[in-house]
Length: 313
Image (cartoon, rainbow, N blue to C red):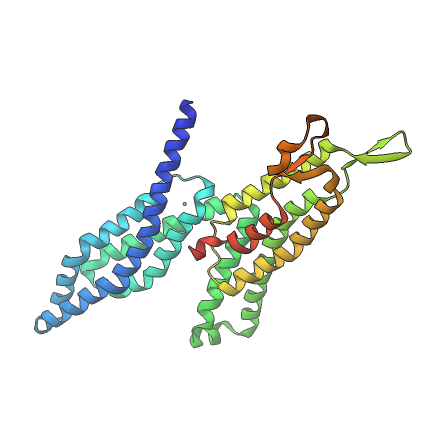
């Protein structure tokens, strides 16, 4: 009972922190992209005749406290030891912090604001290190992280004529190939865990050498393994991020195409032994069927709607 209460308290604390992180993401964008920018313009208008140094000092004096408060909250989160299933929320904090760095460098470009620039860069470094360390423990997410990383580099190169000329078409083609390979590796490593649950071999037992029949124990183990994989995807992958919409949808569609027909066929072949979970109470003990916890529709929704859904919050 005490353990249950402790877990509930921890969950409530995490729910509160998650809400604050999501709010921080919105507030930080508004502050650094809008409010601080406007404050700097106002300082420039008021102290126009006093020189650039005076303008910068006034601006830094006004916004240092709110800027530091934002960074301190994110830094505290980066130093906390969160379980792997919360990685999506932490990576959302990292993505936002990393995207803000160019704006912070531009806004706080004076010597007086050096501490803010340094603090922001240190924060991003630590968050990049509270995401890689967690993702690398999980092989499919390692591929996903690599895909996002390389794709980000490709986008930056494509957005700069100078970088494109420097890198060259051959290396750009290699980078694009790396993105495709990482995406394929993620898809294969994730789908194979599901597909291994849908294999027929190992499900039959022989009777006298003349015939064989399905082992309900072996079939039940397959559904247990399937449920475990389903829940792993919910915990880890649904909270991950694939920022590019086209890449995200391409991954989802390819996985639906691989998994949904296989799961449908598996259920069709063994429908005599299974039933959807909510109907299990109607069966007598002697004719009890194997409960199917997740339907085909559940699996399709998991992939096509919830996979990488952190982007769509």
